[in-house]
Structure formats: C-alpha cells, structure tokens
Image (tube, rainbow, N blue to C red; front, side):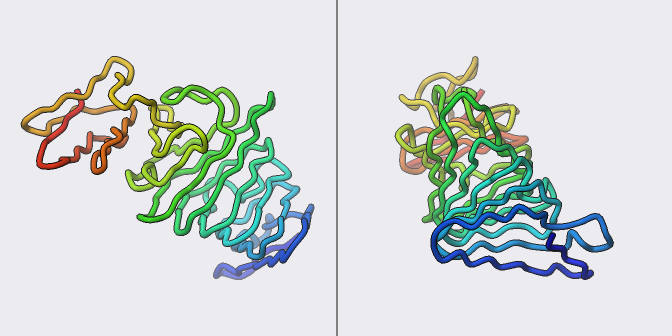
Length: 240
C-alpha cells in the first residue's frame, strides 16, 4: 500500500524504463489524508495497476503504457487524468475517472472482443495541435459503441472533440446525449436523429442533446447546454 498522509498532495513517480512492472497493492487508504496522493507514470515500459485505488491527487501519463489490471484502478471520479503522452490500456476493465486533460498526443487502447468495459471521465479538455488516438473502438459512427465505450459525464470541450482520432474510422468526435464519445459519421451532412443542419442567417440554436462536426476546415458543433455555432467563411450555421 502507498498512501499520502499529508494535508497536501504527495506525488508518486514511477519510471518504468522498459518491460512490464505490475503493482498489486493499493494507492490511497482510509486514514486521514491517505488519499492525498498523485501518480505520475514515466518511462517507455508498462505499468500495470492490479487493484482498485482511492487516491485523489490525479494521474499523469507522460510516457509508455499504463494498463488497467482491475476496475477503478485510477482513483475514482475525484481523481483527474492528464494525458501528457503515452498510452492508456483499458484491458477490458472499467473505471470512473475525474477530469481529463489532453496536453500532449496520447493514445487509449480499447479491446475489441466480447467483454464490455467503459471509461467514464467527469469532463474533458483538449489542446490545439495534439491528438488523442482511440484504438479498437467498435460500432457505427454516430451511434453508441457496441463494445468498449468512453463517456464524459459533464462537458467535453469542442477542442477535445476535434483532437480525437478514432483509428481507422474518423478524425473528430461527437458526444451523445448519454455522454458517450463516438466517431463522427460520414458523410458529414447526415441527419443526427430528427435534427438537421441548415445554413441560416442569424446563427440561432435551441438546446441539443448530441454533437455533430461537419468536416469543413473551420466548422464544429459541440454538445453543451446551448448550441455553439461557428461561422466558416463568414456564413452562419445553426442547428434546429
């Protein structure tokens, strides 16, 4: 067991230079301040977390692989996750995770098989010029996945959605009303449910429970409490 124990957050940095290292103990504990612990993974090797953990200081993945060996290995919904490079291997395990931040190009490896698992983040933000590649997603673009799934229970920023690449399917993502993050359907002018995209003169929109990104250079629509509009080449677009 590794615990914090201080009023301020302590950081545990694990540098796995090569090969695979498995940690089967727990990170965090039930005592006073014991969950005040953060995890940073560096090095080109693989770190496997083989237990459910309760630490709340967050996780930073900078290099190599971080593999889930148990459900809820990443500390729960109050523990943020910073993709700063590296690869998160879901490995057929589910996890509730705090706020996702994408600060360097990174990867999530799902598993395409008969075992269903899901990763649920409380929110998600991205950065221009970086990519989050998602491998092995199964399903039909624009619809709920049929195997492993990724959810953002709160707000997924427009930048984050633009930063996603579903390998072999599409660049750019949409957030369904359930919070699930899925590939953008092609062709991009298909209807989403009973909604349509129209060229309008006033850029007005009503509340919307999904996301569509049109594959033009400067046009995105994102899920939010109110419709956000973009104006490619001076035009105004709305969703009704």
